[in-house]
Image 1 (tube, rainbow, N blue to C red):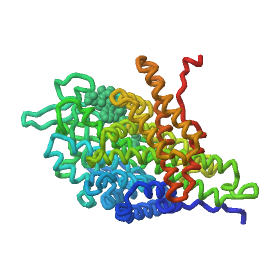
Image 2 (image 1 turned 60 degrees about the vertical axis):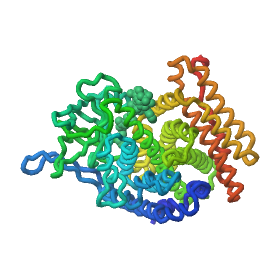
Image 3 (image 1 turned 120 degrees about the vertical axis):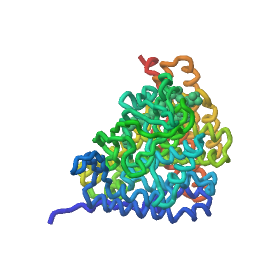
Image 4 (image 1 turned 90 degrees about the vertical axis):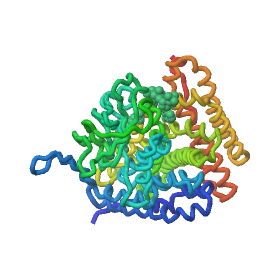
Length: 546
Ligand code: MFK
């Protein structure tokens, strides 16, 4: 019998995750952590169960049937097993509800996103409608249409699977995913005061959702973003038939294949105004802020899965006389990815913390500013990092990593959606500029200074200087280019990446100092040294080099 390589096993994603455990120990109050722990453990158990199932079966895909046997148009969607399990898991473990639960105080978002991080990699992208539902709940909380709020919010925030709803978010049309001002869907007000939408929505993920927020232009409104209004659509009529919706087809996507993403037409679809009859982009912005944070956590969850499998495999795989994990070159590459991941988790968790504080009314102006500025930074840098780490994972597994039934290619394909979903990296970079225009760089520079002060005397002086140097360079570059719109735009991604990396490094420095002092744990400090050695500053000026 020739040699057969033992397969990697997935370690317990909660107890064995040093980075998550360490972060929670520093931030989440002990009593709250004890209360949330049964959910953390249950989600980690589910992740292991789903992993075993995934490796033992061929993944399914949703099925769209347009007509029944008699010729009636039905547009029936059949979901995969993981998707059928989704509502019960989401509702029972509060994956949306926690974020809006005032009894959890300022740590509501941290608790919620720890759960999202544990669940996403096992969810077959059921996390996508949960992200949208969370965003929609956030937008509806501030909506002036009180009856809509009262009717829909309890479903989105339900902890009971029987009453739990998910929401879609319908912005993208054929004319543009980024430039939504070009939307062509029209809204008509009937004589009885009800609204009807007609048009084509081009990227409607989770078409099985019970509701969706949609942008449309009320008849008579001007073109451009301000002429759009935000509507809420209940996708089904009381008898279960579609509410003026036909599903043209399901998208044939690179990844996220269990997620039913559809092209649809709206034909006089009944809808309700969320607020004003204009300025719908502003009204939908809270959805984007929340879903972009979900993107960052989804990407982190995938990275965690990649790194856990790689580490386990490297212990089981022997080459050239010793385990892969003992080979210095392999270990160097893996440790580099782990350091990047650890810094990224610090950044995303800090955004969640600030968001929670602001929403709980416990935040100050600095929290508001940091949450706004850091959300696009987290999305743009962390989601690209996820693709890099998933690609490294494929390579670490060699030929097996290139084979579908190893489950590894799926990680890479799925990771690739995060930089695209809810606005590509360039859109985030421009959003960062938009936020800077209102808030300036001072909140970021001051925050970095504060975090480094907390770490003073514990981290290497060279690292502190590198972090200071990178954020100050970003500040100077911004001032130097503020009056030249084209060069500002051309450098926006480099600026955003530099800010994201220096902020993440400062946060990791603060955490490393705490871990050393309180837990005699030197692992975060080692990650910090590696992360800084990879370089923080990505700003350069191509013109100046020519
Ligand atoms: C798992 C999923 C799998 C499925 C595959 C996914 C594949 C991809 C499918 C997609 O199509 S995803 C793409 C979805 N599209 C987006 O995410 C939109 C990308 N575009 C943007 O984000 C634009 O920046 C945006 C449309 C939001 C705004 O562009 P505009 O039209 O130039 O608006 P403008 O004038 O800058 O902003 C309008 C208002 O919104 C302003 O408020 P005021 O009027 O009060 O000044 C802005 O401040 C506000 N705003 C914009 N972005 C904001 C924001 N406020 C808070 N946070 C933000 N991020």
